[in-house]
Structures are given as C-alpha cells and as structure tokens.
Amino acid sequence: MAKTSPGPLLGTRALNRATLDRQFLLRRSPRSVKDAVAHLVGLQAQNVKPPYHALAARLDGFDPERLSQLMADREVVRIVTLRSTIHTHTADDARTLRPLVQPARDRELTAFRKGLTGVDLDRLAVLARDLVEAEPRTMAELRQALLVEWPDADPQSLAVAARCTLPLVQVPPRGLWGRSGQVALTTAEHWLGRPAAPAPAPDDTVLRYLAAFGPASVKDMQTWAGLTRLREVFERLRPRLLAFRDEHDVELFDLPDAPRPDPETPAPPRFLPEYDNLLLSHADRTRVIPPEHRGRLWQGNQPHRTLLVDGFLAGVWKPVDNTLVIEVFGPLSRDQRAAVLEEGERMLATLHPATSYDIRFGSVVAR
Image (cartoon, rainbow, N blue to C red; front, side):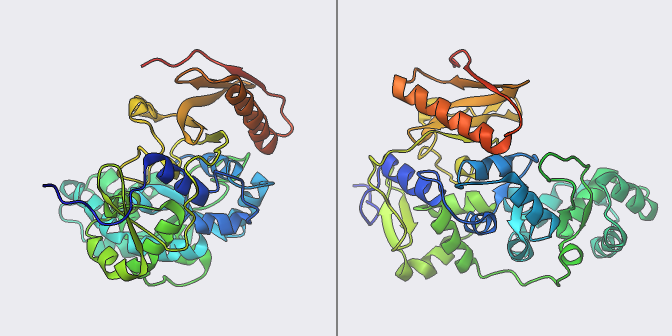
C-alpha cells in the first residue's frame, strides 16, 4: 500500500486561493510599492515593463512613477538572482539574496568553462569590479576590456563569468517607466553605497517564500529559488510549520497563521505580465495553470502576457498599437466577459492614463 503523506488534503482550488491571497491577487493591497516588492521577494524583470504590470494587478492606487522613483533613489534595483534571472528587489534583498543563490551562479558558470580555459576567475572578478565601479559598463564593454587580459578566451564566457562572480545591478535609466536605456552594470555594493551583506539563513528565506507563495513543497521552493538540497531546511523548520498534502499526495508546508481562504472565494480577473512569478514559482503549477493549458505560456521562445479568470490561466493579451487585444482559451460567460473588460480598463487607466486605448477580444486561441 502506498504511503500517504501526513496532513490534511488541500485541493487545487484551495491552493489557488491561498496563493492568490498572498500574491495580492484576490483583492488589491493598500501596501506601499517598496513593502509589496519586499513581501513578494522580488518581481521578475527580464523585460522592463513586467514589474510595473505585476504591481498594477496587485496594488490599490498604484502609480508606476513610484517604482521608478524607488529605482532612481537606489531603494530598489534590477539584479540577477532567483533562477539566474533578472529580478527587481529591494536594496536589502539584493544584498542578501544574491549571495544566497551564489551556488546557482557557480553551476551556471560551469557551462562556460571551456571558453574560460586559462582564465584566473579570482583575478577576473577583481578586474571586472574595478571596471564597473569606475563607471557602469555594458556587457560588450566588459567583454572587450577583459579580452585585453585573456585574448584567447571566449568573449561571451568572460562577460558571463563577471556576471556570475559579482553582484551586478543594472543602473537607470534602464528599468524606469516610460524611459529607455541600454543595460549598464556596476556592483551592488558600489551602487548602494553599502558593503556586501552575508547570505541570510535559508530558513528565513523559506519562511518568506511560504508567506508569498505557499502552501508549497520542497520542490516548489527549489524551483522558485533555483537551488537544490533544501529538504533539510524544511525538516529543521517542521516544528514551526503546518503540513498538508495535495491531490497527488505531495507533502506541502505552510506557516500556521498564513491565509488559506475558502476555495470558493471569488477571484477577479487579472492581467499579468510575461514571466510573472505567480506562474513560475512552483514545481507543480496546476494551482494556477490548468493541465489542458500547459504549454500555452509561450509562443516559440517568447512568453505571453497572461490573463487569469476565476484565479486560473484563461487566456493571453497583448498591446497592438492603441488596442488591448485579449485572446481567451475558451468561452467566457457574460459576467466574466464584463469583468475582464472592466479589469482591462483599470489596467490601462493605471499605466497609460494619457493614452486612449480600445479593447477587443481576438479569436479564441485553439490548441
């Protein structure tokens, strides 16, 4: 007989509503932008606009200029952290999460070892630090400067090595709302005017992850962080946590006082950006992505912006000229359609108040 995981069962809808509540997606939060970024442990920022769309879906009265100002004031930064991807983090999290995920950066670097034959990585880190702290540099500028020292090395591998060994942040105007700028890098210590912080205990980060993404399994947390071997951390924390199981009998952990709403709690439509962490931070993503829609987040290697209806992935959206085009995976009820249109109008008024947009539904997307 198969062994049953301890703890009560949490069905898919129960997990969906619990996670949406912690993500500020059941109702918009009145929190400040900085507090929200901290609670969510960062926002995916592979592109410039996603953090702004993510907060527009989550915060009451969000103004994109508030996030831009925090970035200009060096209170939030864009830096490679979780899953080797760029995130927008508070300055405090940038200083601590980056060393926490260093093992993942070390693993990433091994893929480029052939192009780094004969390169002294310690010396490379010193030279790269001197370069970017003298003035912010692009990756191309870093490559060219480091090639002077190691002319036989692979140029791309040299730049990747600098990114993996140093906590490099992207400086404004990159990342500011309504402005543009190429990626220019300097160290977090130099930009923030503070020395590097020690990595936080993984225990603290597990608790923060559960507060924003739980209930969750060990594999879920490892997927979110891009780390491995976290089982022992969860076991150490077990006396402080509650244990549940999902419909596949996987053990889930949670904070005792975290919200777990009734599974039938209404979930309003939400327009989320490409790469939103809600859809990327669990090994089992069925709490948000129905199995029949698996694989619909991408078109080739390009991610879609996603639409939630009743808390689950139900379609994609895109701006086309001055039109918001919504493509759904199946028919919507009259009430759902009206709610989607209302949410679309709210998003546009929040992020583009001076621009007149039309909203239309495109063809139903077929598999």
